[in-house]
View 1 (cartoon, rainbow, N blue to C red):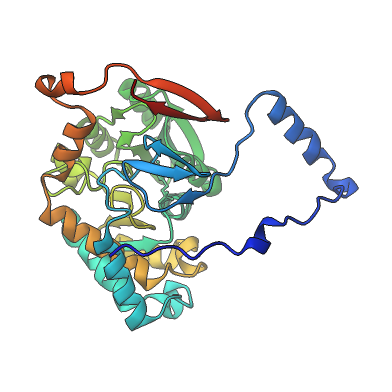
View 2 (cartoon, rainbow, N blue to C red):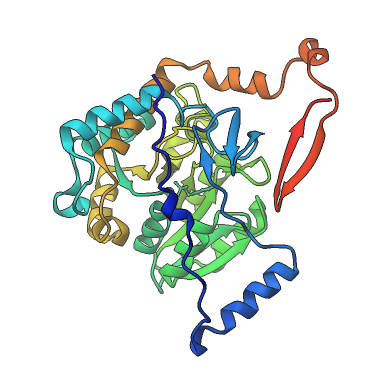
Length: 350
Ligand SMILES: Cc1ncc(COP(=O)(O)O)c(C=O)c1O
């Protein structure tokens, strides 16, 4: 049965009065002012209740087009139960980085479950997909190396490239001939790496994975793909676009997140066992950051089991979002859109 959240402590709403910033930070007020003047200020909205088709934000109820909870598992009580059981048995906090003593049985089960699901030798968990990308790219590449990165890659890939200090060439979105030119020019690099999202969430486009793996093979490059938005949604087993494209053997590293369709939190990288073992010695966000709680790992494992047990779920969700023509008359044809906060609008049928 769903639980109720504790009522927030009323004393928390009494903010400490703002003090003038010290001289060294005075520029912050000026920057905030220009952000406000440009109408770009980003409010923090407080969500009440669970993610779902509707969502409560700042006391209003909205139709929810603003989450990555593609399969509706974020608010699924079966994940909460798995998490509670693990927290009860293994405690809440991981207490240490995975390298030291933070890698619990729940984490171990999850890593093995991911590897089986993706049909690869091994996987490695990170506290977020962001950390998985930055740590993996920064471990793989250094100043002697060359990275070719799609122009529309996610911020975490961009930051990983910057951290690596490698030479980074950005190729226009999905432009294979530019990519070929970059790789040809990088022939003298110690390592050549191609990195791309598989499903570009802002554009809805898909990376040409078969061509990319062919190009990587011909140029002796490493192919690393980020399946953040494809994990749980594409492929017969739901493991992502690499599975759907049937080109697993040409992709050397697959990054994914547990925080979108899987409704939990954290990220992973998966591939050859030696590569994963090497990352345990080189990926700084794995070595120097506390593992996420065992309860989170148990919830993610439960989500993967559900993806396998409920293979029709992506199609069902798609039908709800995009109903077949015969059902269209039942849908409201017009919505009233009301702007009720910066960057936030509510929709209602007439
Ligand atoms: C393509 C891509 N990679 C990685 C991430 C980061 O994943 P996480 O939210 O688990 O940190 C995101 C998040 O939006 C993403 O869109």
